[in-house]
Image 1: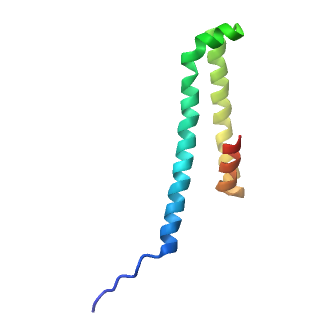
Image 2: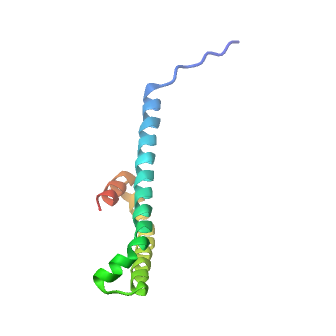
Image 3: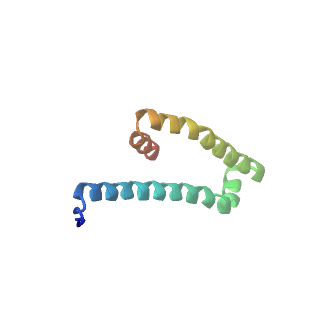
Length: 95
């Protein structure tokens, strides 16, 4: 008995390419998000002078931001399961 290989389905290959594009877009957005958060501490001195706040207050602002983001992760995951990840990702990127 001989085996024959079926040709690769073009639709499946296109689906994998589309999945890769989505993963790359989400990864890029995630990277940019972290970049902007990590870019803030070096400019604290300028922000502190401009807004007359202390380093403690600036640090607290970052903590509040991170806690709010952490608190939103679970509801966003549930929402993605209910209405679809694509809609949630697009809405999140639009914010």
